[in-house]
Length: 129
Image 1 (cartoon, rainbow, N blue to C red):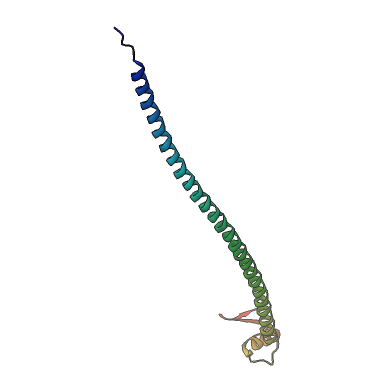
Image 2 (cartoon, rainbow, N blue to C red):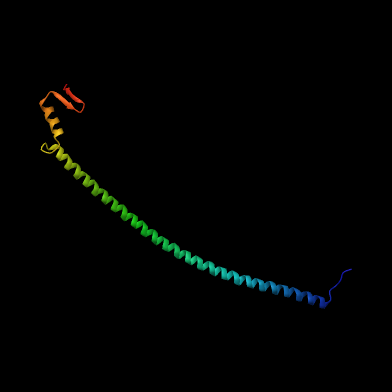
């Protein structure tokens, strides 16, 4: 036996369904508001992160420029140091070549090697071949 609904039962059933749909619609609207707020929050975070990234890129450019300047200064200092070392080496070399300087041992060895058939070295004296 099938029971047919009366118009009043159908009306009550439809009312209940409409009430449920309205509740779901209200919940959906609340979720939608909440999601819009979260989306605004994420958009603000995204804009802040974009700004932070721009600032970091500017800082990186300044650091790169500072490193480049330091590298150039290092090379210039290295060139000046090498020039100074060359000057000192040439000055010391001239003193060694000048017998009137205080380096008498090398002058004595040079004189003995010219005058004698013997070779003077640290270990002693040897005959020249």
